[in-house]
Amino acid sequence: MTRLDPYPAPDAALARRPGSARLLWLLVVVAALVALAAASVAVGSRGVGWSDIVAALGGSSETIEQAAVTKRIPRTVLAIVVGAALGLAGAVMQGVTRNPLADPGVLGINMGASLAVVVGLAWFGLFSATSKIWTAILGAAVAAVFVYAVGSLGRGGATPLKLALAGAATSAALTSFVTAVALPRGDIAESVQSWQVGGVGGATGAAITPVLPFLVAGLVISLLSARSLNSLALGDDLAAGLGERVALVRGLAAAGSVLLCGAATAVAGPIWFVGLIVPHLCRLLVGVDHRWLLPFTALTGACLLTASDVLGRIVARPSELDVGIITALVGAPVFIAIVRRQKVREL
Image (tube, rainbow, N blue to C red; front, side, top):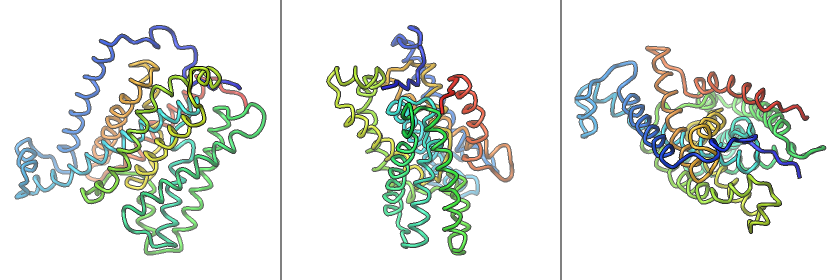
C-alpha cells in the first residue's frame, strides 16, 4: 500500500520538539486566544471601553455599549468553539487519510452537511436545533464516505491529489444542489444564502448550547485517537504490527472528525480552510506527535477564527465581512502553496 504521508521527510528537530519549547508555545497560543477574545468583545462598529465590558460581564446592559458587549460575548464563544472544532477536525482528517490536503471544506464534508441541513429545512421541516445538528452530521458522514470512495478509484488508491479533486468536484456539485433546493423556497432562501457564506454573527447562547454536547463528544473521540494516529502515520502494516486495529482506529477517528465538522457547520455554516491551515502551522511549532498536535490545533483554530471575525469587522466598517470570506481569502493561497510544496503530480 502506498503511503500518503502528510509529513514528508520531517527532520529530527521538527519531529522531536523539546517539552520546554512545546510548553512555551502553549502559553503563547493561550495568551493569543485570550487577547483575541478580548478584542472580539471590544471591537465592532461601535467601540467600547473596559468599564463597559466589565459592567456587561456583570450582567448590566444599561447603555448601548454594554448591550453591544452582551451581544458580542456569544459571538466570541461561537468563534472559539467552531474554530477549535474545525482546526482539530482537519488535523484528524490529515492523520486518518495521511493526506496533507485534507480539510473539511476541501474534501466536501462541510457542503455535505450544508446540503443535508437545507434539504431538511425545505422538505422535512427540521427547524429545531438538535434535528439540524443530527442532519448535518449525517450529511457530513455521507459526503466523507463518498469522496473517499471516489478518490480511491483507479491506480494508486486514494492519493492526495485525487482526494482533493474528488472533494472539490463534490463541493461544487453539492453547492449547486443547495441552490436548487433553496431557490424555489422564498421563505428560507435568504437565510440559507446568508448561512452558506459561513459566519458567527448573530450568535446567541440558545443557539450555542445544543451544539456543545456534539462538539465535546467529537473532541473526546479525536483526542483519544492521538496515540493511534501516531501509529497510522508509520503505515498500515507497521501500525497493525504494533497491535492497532487499523480499520477500527481509522473509523473511530474519522467519526470524531465528522462529528466536529457536522456540528460546527450546523451552527455556523460551511467555513473553509481552517482545518487545512492550522495543522500545518502547528506541526511547525510542536512537531508531528498527535498527542501534542491535536490540542494545539484546537487552540490555534480558535485563534484563527476569532482573529478572522475581528478582522472582518475592521476592514468593512461600519459593515462587516463574514469569517467564511476571510478564511477563504487567506486559505486559498495557502492551499496552492501546499500543493506546490508537496509536488503532487499523480492523478
